[in-house]
Length: 239
Image (tube, rainbow, N blue to C red; front, side, top):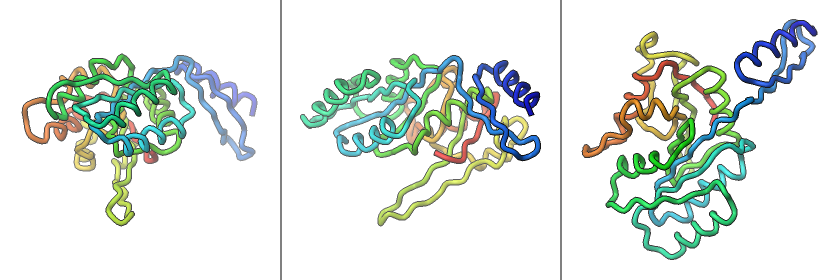
């Protein structure tokens, strides 16, 4: 038992983790709690125009439901007009040191707005979130730890679509947990075409040139561009 615990502890140390290993009482089965020795900074980017109420719900799901402190939120402000929107920004800045607002001066252009936000983001990973989205408890930590543990450039995660009347629709993920499209081309059919259910290594996003600007539905090609370019894609069925 002790030899097994030591072997696992040393294995995860080589991967950059401090591991608490506990024997479960079942032959050769152990329970592990992993802690990253170096904590990656993650930037969460949220475009917003006068959506104070939905933005507040979105931010509450992040601040109140995560134990992972190594993230920053950038709200990309785009032509809001309501005083309460700017009052809410100031309130959040006073309450959270890791909350920031940057202002995009042009008209609405989803790609340009998010590319502008990324230029202000210095984190190792990017997470695009719309103001009417929310994250499940500890979603940030689960995604970042999975990415580091498996050396993923891209992590896909589970999500639900909330329909009118409260009905929820679960979206399905690739069946392979860590893969590249070079090896599993069939998984391309299971990729969602959206950028906001994926944790993205910043270097990968820069490699594909960000969101293409000047085309209709400009966000849709990004998911496939990221997946094709990623060395390894991780899958987390939760979140």
